[in-house]
Image 1 (cartoon, one colour):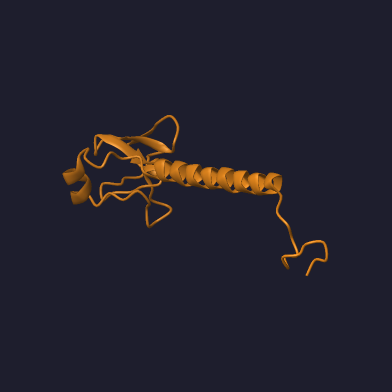
Image 2 (cartoon, rainbow, N blue to C red):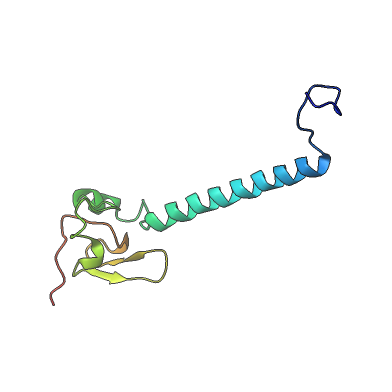
Amino acid sequence: MNPKDGNGCAFRWSRRRLMQSALTVAVGGMVFVETQRSTALGADCADKEEQSGLRESLHYTEKSPDAKQTCQGCAFFSAGEGKQCGHCQILGGSVSEGGRCDSWSPVQK
């Protein structure tokens, strides 16, 4: 018990400290949400409605189960600008550079 405080509270919050703490929590929350949103956008390059039947039939996935077989290493992939997306000649649209489908073919060197 704090002898200067009659209510038994060992720590007293001033309005200034309360506002600083609230602002810190709010800004931290916004940064976290934006980080999660950016990550999700970066990983999700494909428009879900764009060629969805073809994507399903070729078992396209945004994240390849085999790190050696990704869209980035495929002959049908051309790199795009920003957010780790590119274009696939087979699927006819945007794909994740880390994705994969059944038509994957290694780039000929």
